[in-house]
Length: 155
Image 1: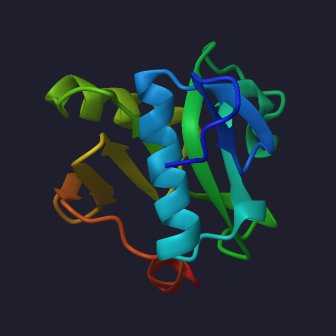
Image 2: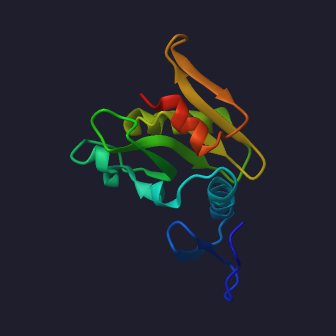
Image 3: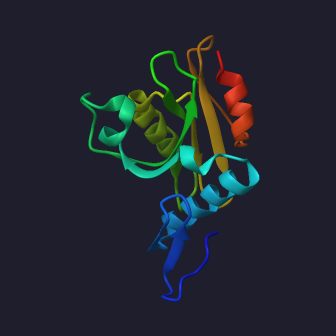
């Protein structure tokens, strides 16, 4: 988890480069951001945190709902029309991971079109992708490294 500030109740977000209120969901977000950057080698410069859908570059000018994503990691040169494109979108929860949470991230991804999605809490992860053969999302209990995901999607 991020460092505690002198003003208790805040945590430093090393992606957004600022102190944020340490709500339970924010603590989950910071735990996973730290693990992604330090453990799974996700580049900080390709991560966005707490961003509105309409603010995502590949969605400019499109009709999207008023929603915010928790964590999004872009990939470079993984899409023929966009130099940066969503690689994995992650929804953070401070409670048990339910079918509703999974449906939420799938619903957001209807607009974002990331190659991969995940729902996480303090102890669990449900990482998934749309299986074109089965015509449904397949989920697993591990978040792969950045390098692994890039290898799976590079043309």
